[in-house]
Length: 450
Ligand SMILES: Cc1cc2nc3c(=O)[nH]c(=O)nc-3n(C[C@H](O)[C@H](O)[C@H](O)COP(=O)(O)OP(=O)(O)OC[C@H]3O[C@@H](n4cnc5c(N)ncnc54)[C@H](O)[C@@H]3O)c2cc1C
Image 1 (cartoon, rainbow, N blue to C red):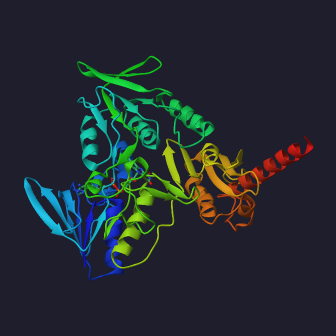
Image 2: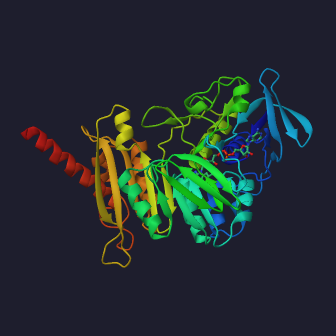
Image 3: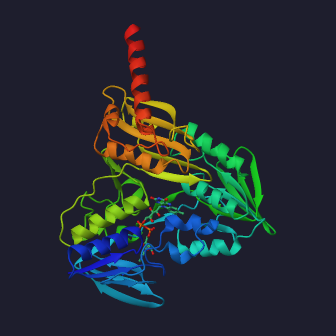
């Protein structure tokens, strides 16, 4: 069985390695555009900040046993009838035949449709090459405007401040719009405390060059001059290769797949940031380009392409990001997203110490729990706290509960670990559940008295 994978990052390499595990005699070939197979692009901000000094350490793995990894091979056409793929290798063309094909071409950064985004000095961050290009320009004392206050924007604000640059962050709405505004405001204040200038609710309108400086203009009268501009305005699926071969698209023009990661073309699978993602709580397809999801979808595609029968269980959009001394995380639906889905949700915010206050260095965790008003089915959770307050692992408690369709009260039955330096007899996740239960009871009592 000849398995050809287009894409050598999270989804493509997960697919290739899983296929070889399931079928050790499969001939597996991976084509990728660049020279960096399976590098952790999630780690780019930490390389640029200097916290991870060697870029070679970003490789998820360096050996690909039994897999033919062909770097600098850009797939340019797929012929699904002849079952061939043509790739450009410098000026040459090479043809590859396959029995099964997996497309894992990922995403690319969105370039806002305004004048000046192609000027010298304007950068994006998605690949190792992008990183090296940007890095050559970084020097202490320089200034940068980051366009986009999503998780990559805020991670880069942290990274470039650490690197000694003066940073201005420009957000189209709030800071970190994937969490509720109260948490976004805490992150915004924290960025300011670390010297980052933050503008929110600003629509970028142009970038212009004035001799050695760039001027960024936005709505609400914003004009900022800087040496560099970094565009971090989100990503879009890199799906054109699959589309040209006849694959149907869905949300945001991402490739449409079923739960087995099969496309509408026979023997062609797709996974990662180029595909639509099944949302486990919404029970519909969405676009959620995340590394965790890309790995899982790739694994499912690889297993099935090698003869297995596995389904992708769905994503909850679980995310965590570190910004200077804070970590902020979310999973599932926020109140506004639940309402949009026609659900009657109640969101309750509470605070609890990350561990017993009598043990040193206890910090409060800001928590928001969203659940169905009637019945208490858990819909989502958001947490913000010190980066050493186990925010990531605590959001995973909510993610696990959501995965198993638990209601809020059932969180209280979980046997979670406790010792004073790490927690309390009731973990903060359970304290948040109890606060939700209590608010819901109060609200129900008030309603019954009306
Ligand atoms: C700065 C940054 C930080 C991030 N941090 C996080 C994080 O903390 N947590 C998280 O979950 N996610 C994070 N992400 C998102 C995560 O990195 C992506 O979701 C994930 O890498 C997607 O994997 P993928 O394999 O689908 O696509 P990509 O990583 O985009 O890779 C696409 C692959 O396809 C290849 N390719 C494309 N076109 C062709 C072609 N025509 N022929 C051959 N090969 C081709 C490319 O060379 C590449 O190998 C981050 C992303 C960035 C940019």
